[in-house]
Image 1 (cartoon, rainbow, N blue to C red):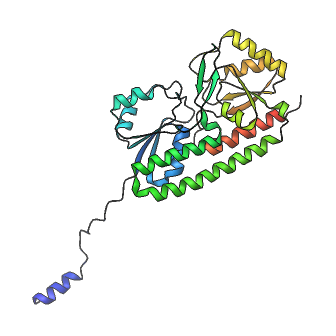
Image 2 (cartoon, rainbow, N blue to C red; image 1 turned 60 degrees about the vertical axis):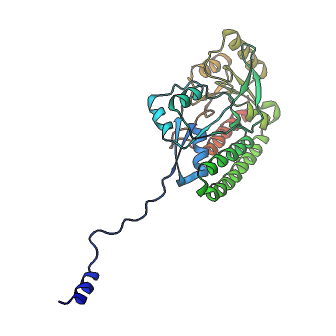
Image 3 (cartoon, rainbow, N blue to C red; image 1 turned 180 degrees about the horizontal axis):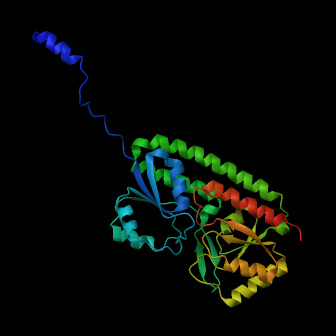
Length: 300
């Protein structure tokens, strides 16, 4: 076989080792302080992100104690999303220990915070701003800006997803308002384990009473519990709700002492596991509202 025929024959044989395809872009690694922020970030970033929440479903971000693996997780991340407003008191220690140099998003940075008086009389900032969907829209803006800065190649994708997500938040806000408008104003009182629904109450005209203050770190005093029992009885509060990340003992005791009924489990600071009723932020709002409205409409 001459040289020309040999080259033609070789050209007809598939190469044993194909040319390597270009490597796909790796997802941006993002750490969120707790599950609600993790879900919001994932809704905006989709497959372009790898999101890990330090405090997972049913976890309590108030009292979380970082673990050694959290250091490794944070060291590998390009973006950190935290709430701010004093919620994650442990976060500065963690970022310092990890030597984190990536972009930090304070999701509640543009929120107008509420302040409340704790049981001991101290004025405290309420960090649970996500309970008002209008604040959640500000969270989305902050997270989106952080993603665009950390990963400008996907900027258009992030902005489009954020616009769609914001519209779904607005629709949920309208649904909550319509659902609760059917409850007479005089019946809009709820008892929860700790004071996590202040922003929700201010948005929709619901009075929330709680045995604990804004944080879950301290136990309520006997005096505070006695005052709460008297108020429940005086105002004919209809239901006591257990929060998913708190012990049910306090709610059970209040129900037993006052005759109020246990209204079920609601989600304030953490989502449910994926197969639960509050696996996403919007699922959480709808689940809680459904339980609240049903309890407040009960006749006594």
